[in-house]
Length: 194
Image (cartoon, rainbow, N blue to C red; front, side):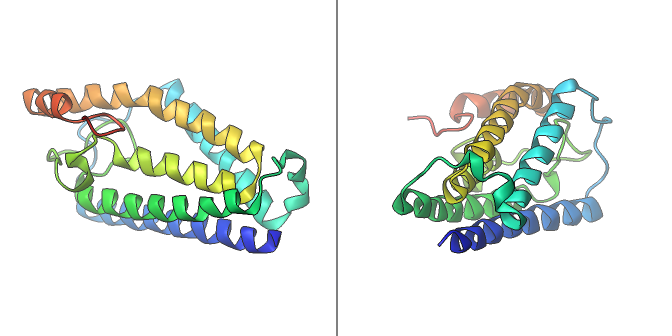
């Protein structure tokens, strides 16, 4: 049965990676370079290191599961399969978020030259739906893999994303001024405002 869960994790990882790479390549062909060079912050470096470690843990689970089997949480199958549903939602939100951003997508905290403020699609409800998708993907992968090592690295990555968000929003305020400030008042950062 664990082989089935590994296939599910593999599909989730391959799909999310394909979506991210597709949109990154598309925007790099179509969009101008960032308006300012991305800052070399320790937070950015830490985020990339943790994301790499998380990717390595998922790869170990997929190829050599015995190397991280000691991190098993002992979840029941229904809890593990709920990860597939959560992962499906995460994949859909990831694709819609990146597709809505279009040429405005940037993997750094800085905006690209000629960017436009996007307030449609999932951005009409929350300012960072792509990060919400990343959170859903971490939860999904942790449940499907039934592994606290993956979950722990995922939690660290989420914390770093949450810490990075104000820096990103400062750049957006610099770029879009009052329009972004008004947008902040209307929408929640990660959850819709009631």
